[in-house]
Length: 142
Image (cartoon, rainbow, N blue to C red; front, top):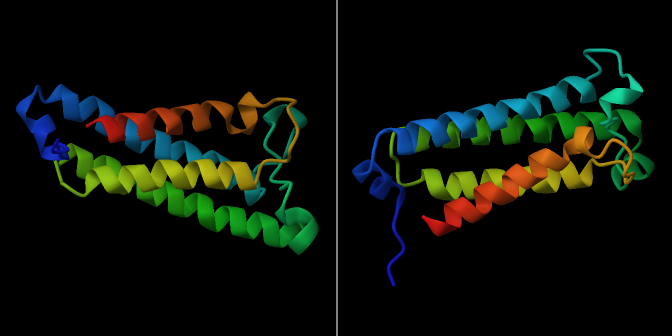
């Protein structure tokens, strides 16, 4: 069975590319909120949830280095998703692998920089991880 590529979507309605492409771009941009929190561009408040206190890195490399590493990775995920969304809109064959990598990287980054607590889990990225899983499943199906 031959796996279809992203250009197959061109054969359906333009909305089959436009809506998901915009969604991928917007999902990528949401990662910038976590960047803002990691860089402490806005003062942290407990109800924000995501503190950038990593269950893994904070004890190993300290708070400042953890926040810097998280910032770099979050910007990378954002760039990957935005590029993937644009390439999806353009019907590029490399959109699918880029979006697969973007979603996997997002899950990895959110998991590595999660504080390990379940309180305010939605604000800590649960919905984002579920969206990433949906993107992985969707990209594997096309």
